[in-house]
Every structure is written in structure tokens, then in C-alpha cells.
Length: 262
Image (cartoon, rainbow, N blue to C red; front, top):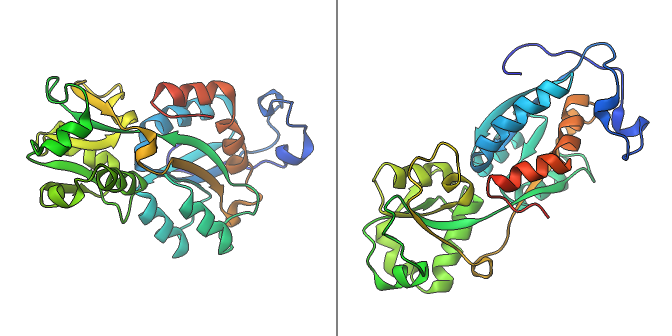
């Protein structure tokens, strides 16, 4: 459900039923609620699919706002009325939990992001992307802003571990989030970029190009956590969405979009 009023429910599904019983077997009682969901930019496309499926099966609705994790976090701290945060990292949800903005014990990892070096040119990255970066044959390298976006922090760490961050620093172009970093490559404003695998595998990507999947030992895991914000402690729509994200078929959907789902 996009903008508009919601419907309310008198049920507390999480408390009233064992976890082994699907909440979707319960009949709708009264009116459902609407949850305001802040979503990291890298997860926007898969969230669009999840939103449609959730609203088709549930009496509840959700309204989605997409942005960089850092900016969404700042908005929440400043009082933005979000009910759920689907972050691109673990640190910001932990900070919200520690500062009393999130419900204790409700945080969990919903996905793990994968970083790739990508070019729209199918011949640009023939094999070892690290060798390409070390060789200096890069005109412009796009990445997300490491001060705002976890994928950007992972990209910077990768460049440092490869030993090329300083040599390439003047050729780096920053996007506010990893989606913008991908767009810089797709539009030809950068010849290669450190972007999310989910962007490259996107159904909207008409340029498969060439890619090198960054070994996970070159950066800290891009652990993406979900958190229930304190204002939504009794919001059935928010709680049901978080339960929905744990369903096996939803996790399989995420995997198809390029995410790890341990």
C-alpha cells in the first residue's frame, strides 16, 4: 500500500500464536494497520516485489521510503516517523537499539550483501578485478560514499586491502548510495564501479557487462539488519512484515536478487 490511511487490527499475532503457525492462516479481524518502512537503497528493487506480495497476502499495508542507511538513520534520530528500518549494515540498527530508538531483541539479519567490480562493457573485466585495479587502467571508478553507505565502506576497505586506494583516490566518483554508484557506470560516467551484485543481477539491468565478484575476505561482511522501531512496538503491520521477511520463500526471493540469506 502506498500513501493513504491504514486499517487497524486487535490481534497481536506474534504473542498469540506459536511461531510454527503461519500468520497468514489467520482471518482478518477488524481493520489492518500501515507500517512506514525505511529501506536501504541497495534493497529497493527486491523490496518493491516484497511489498506487492506482502500486501496481496496480508490485511496490512506498508509505505516504503528508500535512501542511504546513514541518512535514514539520521532521520530516525531526528524524529522521522518510521516503524521499521531495513538497513544495509548492522551498525546503524545496533546504534538505534542502544540509544532506545528500537525495540530490544527485535533486530535480526535479513540479508547479506555482495560487492562486485562491474563494467557495462562485456570485455572490460576479463578475470581478476584486483589485477585490473592494480594495473591502473581505470579512468573513473564509482563507489558509494563510505561515510553514508555500508557498500561504500566495503568498497573503500577492498581498495585498501588490494593496495590501490591511494593511487586511485583522485579517480573515484562517489554516489550517495550504492544505487547511484551503479548508475554512474550504467550511464558511462565511470568505466568501472564497486557496486552491489543485486544491481547487476537486476531485471532492469539491460547491460550485463562484465564483473568480478569481490572475495568476501577483502572486506567486512555487508550484514544487513532489520529493526523494529520503538514507536511501532504494537504495530501489527510492522511486526508482520518482519515475520514475513523470515519466510523461506521470501529468503529464496532475496537470494535470486543476489543476496546471501544464511
